[in-house]
Image 1 (cartoon, rainbow, N blue to C red):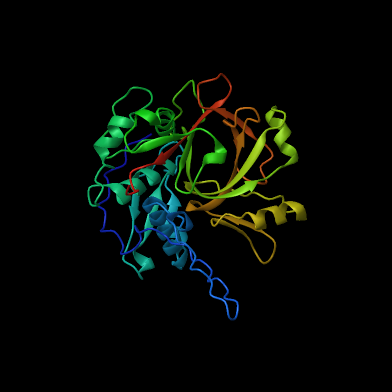
Image 2 (image 1 turned 90 degrees about the vertical axis):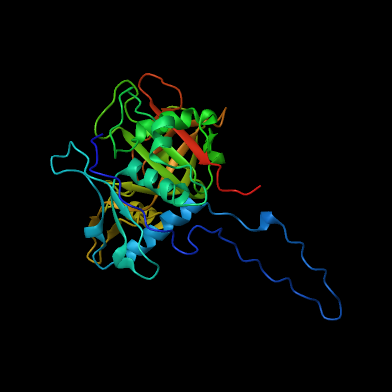
Length: 327
């Protein structure tokens, strides 16, 4: 991974974006002539959204309001296709979409997202460049340059060892993934492949199981496919329908990507950058552990993936930020 020019300065948190999201509850009906006891309110009735997920959603939604979004939201790689570009992620003021910008890659985007939510300008203060250098060092043993970020394989290695990483807990099973959890995988466990070492996403929502005829290609009888909506920065949206197949088009429209669309004249049009998409993560039927993934509901190839190094299989690991809840 090349060294971006410098870390961008962070603006102060938008008012309210790092708060906790509260779900509305229905008012109980009252039968005429009879009093109904007040419903007991518990913390479990109000699902939490971690600050870093709220910050990601704020960035995505404000960028979508920009008339020229794709000039200011993209996966930033140099024209030679072999070098990553500088990383700049800017959160503007509330009500000013023109101030928001994303020029990053998958891992640098999520690193800056964590710095914004839990960095030196916040009440938490732990997500700093020195923290990432210490707990997510370059996987090949090299020294990370000033102003550069962990890449996907660095994050995967850190999440694999998340029990020893402050502010993170390991998540070993797809069924246990929650909104805000980070999933990273290494495309080539035996070598450091630059600049594209793998990929990393953040879970936005769990949508249940999603079976497909291509699941059998993973070679694991009874494998369980779990469907998630994710937030990530990518140069390849999670979509790719076969435009000649109405079934494929319908699958995409039910599970779309904000960076791609089917135009009015039935053309496939895609962009890159930060946004929402849909992915499948597979679970082993016996252990429930990660067994692989599929890039989208229309992907014809599932990739086998395990946490520990295995020849011919990509390495995958997930971590959960545990530093935002007040006990």
